[in-house]
Image 1 (cartoon, rainbow, N blue to C red):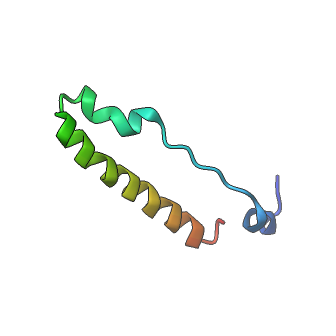
Image 2: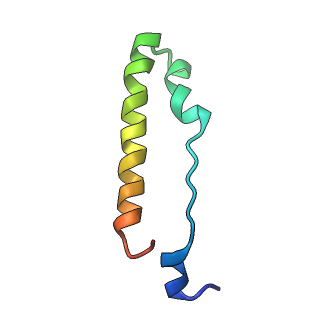
Length: 58
């Protein structure tokens, strides 16, 4: 198990999948609705990365 101080020096990678970006198509949303939805998904992803980055975990 890594030491606690190792976590602050680690490289973290995040992956957002194709399904996250196209899920609206499977929910019968129009292309216009999906295009409007994608920035929301990316903003949520961005917010989560910032929270993790600002926490004591990273």
